[in-house]
Image (tube, rainbow, N blue to C red):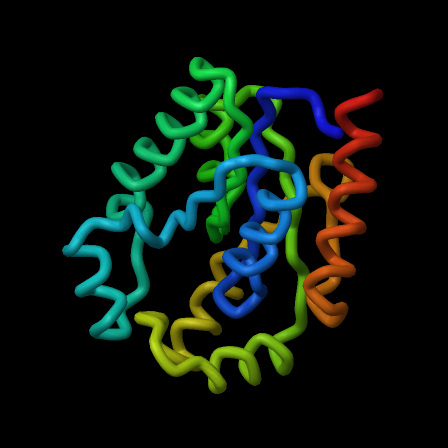
Length: 173
C-alpha cells in the first residue's frame, strides 16, 4: 500500500489519541509502532509525575533517541510509525534528522474535547489541566502544507482511513 521503508509521525498534544491512532495506523500499514512516551528518561517521567512541564533540555536526548529509531528503521528497510507530541517545529526538525522524508499526521482537537479525554484516563503519567494548558501554549502546529491535519472528533478508525488515503497520495506524488 505505501512505499517501504516509510517514516510516519503521529503527533498532537496529550489526549489527542496519538498512541491509539498511531497503533491502528501502523497495523493498517504493516509497520512497527513506537510510543514515544516509552522512551522518556526516568527523570522526565518523574518530572511529569510532579506535574512539571518538560523543557527543551529535558526533551533533547529523548528526541535524539527517537530520531535514531527512525534512522535505524530506514537502514533496516522497515516502515515505522511513532506517536509523539512533537509540539514544536524544532522538535520535528530533529526527528527529520533520522527520516528526511518524514510524513506527519497531526491530530487536531479543541481544549474541551482534550480535557474530557484526559479526565477519563485511569493510568497515565500526564497530569491534568495545567499540563494540557502548558502543552497547548507550547504547541506549534505544523503548517497544513507540511502535514495531514485530522480532527480528533471523529472515530479512530475513520481517522486512520483518512490518514491512509492522504499518506498514499503523498507517497505516490
